[in-house]
Image (cartoon, rainbow, N blue to C red; front, side):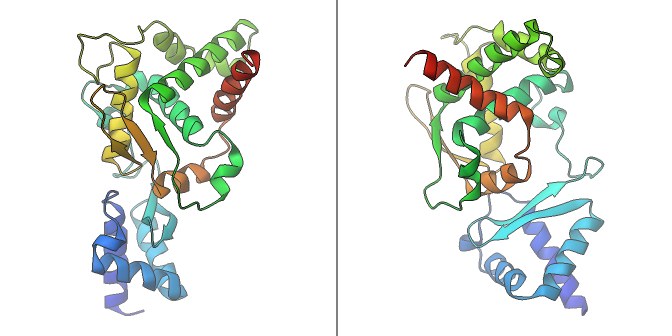
Length: 241
């Protein structure tokens, strides 16, 4: 192992801390990704550099670049309080439910995560908002039967269930209404490179999940809430069929 190997490995990890950067736009990044794919020794060095920073390599591809996950104690770890100034750690359950609804909308079936499809899934803000409503309704119903998981998320779904769907004179991305709350979380996903956005005049923007989103979600696919979100929509669609 040469000093330049460690330097190059560190550079690749550093690129991963810029989630909206893509290899196709940066020659150095593209070359480092190719080296990771072709050189097993370099791959091991990258993993070691990441581990030293309490990061982990989720995956690497020519399309996404390097996707990094974090350990909880890492300085790079995501916390709700860093998400946005007007969202506190007390809102962790609320934000988590919105994220689960977004995941279930983009990937309504588990097998969709297993294919590296060229066409990325998309959804409008209102579609994700409606999925969130169904998820919270399902959790409320399960809570009445004494379900432990529903009780654990009660603070989040009760807050969401109490929100009006949209407040026309409020800011588009504001937590005072459901439409704005979902927009707030989706804006964060855009800023961190997990979705692209096609903005629309009426505020019902179209969001497209990036390959980075699929790669990260595949690592955390075994989330019970995700199954609840998928099942809630399927049940309601069957009831209205």
